[in-house]
Length: 70
Image (cartoon, rainbow, N blue to C red; front, side, top):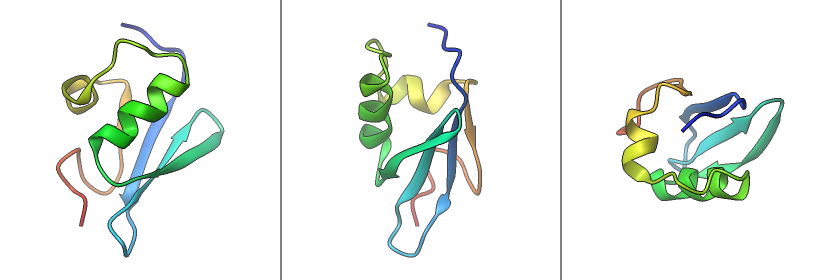
């Protein structure tokens, strides 16, 4: 699966959520991998799941990888 969108997951904030940015806009606050999956599906990436999110080189994780949720 390919995407032309830049996806950045920011470090956790105080309540454990992580901001999610696609290209130049923030799409929401994720509290787990399934939230990120839903943001990607809403953006048109229908074939993603939590395993894809964990392993994809297309997602830039800042402040810790997919297992860091404070």
